[in-house]
Image (cartoon, rainbow, N blue to C red; front, side):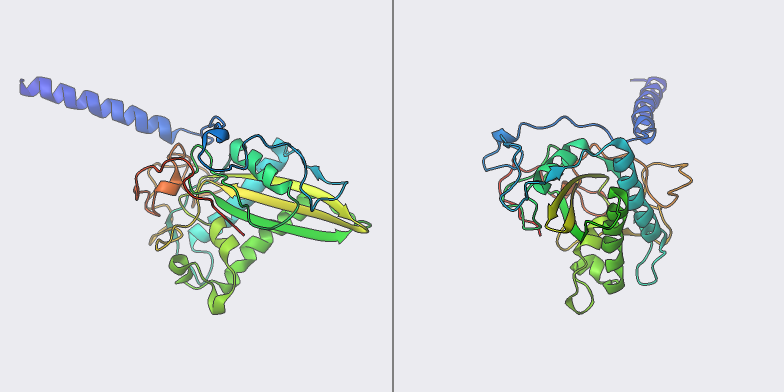
Length: 290
């Protein structure tokens, strides 16, 4: 093979790879994933043959809220606002993130979160709730009870819920990013889930019901992955975005990595985006989350 031909071949391969990477870097939204056949798993799955009925703890007034685009965008945006602050190094007790992905809405996770919300409780889910590209999904759950006579909107309560997650940062120390534990044993799990760096997808379900003179709004969110044991919650960097794969011109979330590796199962990646384990067989273990 002549050196000229070899150079042409190398340039051609580089061009193909460059095109593929450019295509990934031009993504404006996360890729859409098809819903899996949950009944093919070897253990009970939340999404398999669900009867669409509310749980025994629900009141007759219980309803599952339809998450319209206006609400899903508001949820994602507020989560990204908090992630952007952390990634910048905007909290005095946490370092900047060299790699923290921008979040996008995932409808398959949202549907499973809705089924979880139909239980009307914060108890752990004792069934698998893995998804096609979420072998180790993250989980947060919260509810607010307020007098029915008070005028509260779904959006107001949702923002309050996310603020509660974020406010757990007051109990965070730098070592919490590795240990997963807050100062003096305080719970910081919701905050750490909110800022898990490699995660790029979220979907939520909201149930609303009444208990006598009270209105209850319950929100459960599922995430593409959670913090792995013995790994950092996010990749630490001297400056934000230093480890991002693609450039980004987003002026609102300047410290977050763009949608570039969202087609991967982040449950199989460490905080640096490197594969840690081979892809597991579907649903080998029952996952429980609080």
